[in-house]
Image (tube, rainbow, N blue to C red; front, side, top):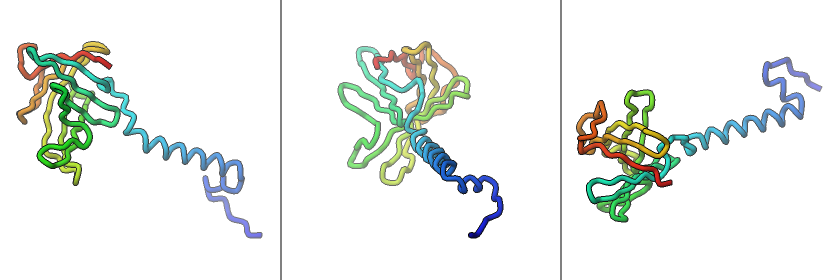
Length: 160
């Protein structure tokens, strides 16, 4: 019988129970690492309703990082939406460490993930059901403050 010298943490493999526990621990870590990005705990996740004059629209932020705009029952954005024969993804990115918090909408092609457009904005949660977004949709620099008089700012109410 061949004996092996002590090799640090590999020594646990000498004991069957420790081997099973180690394998279970590794499987758990691997499983959690694959699902961590899918389970965003962002307070933005959900469907938000906003009004601009007489027009009512919705913004839906999902747990996987996709964002969809719905106006007149027409969806724009989200995962694999089609426009002019090309499939795109529209995602959102946040930076809560910035003040005010940053919110970007990113449009990229499904084929190669190339970023086509980025709309930069700021957001603020007034409470769990009230969201204020000041967003530049024309590619100009990100707003630095909230302005209730700005046509780039909208207040949304969470519907689900």
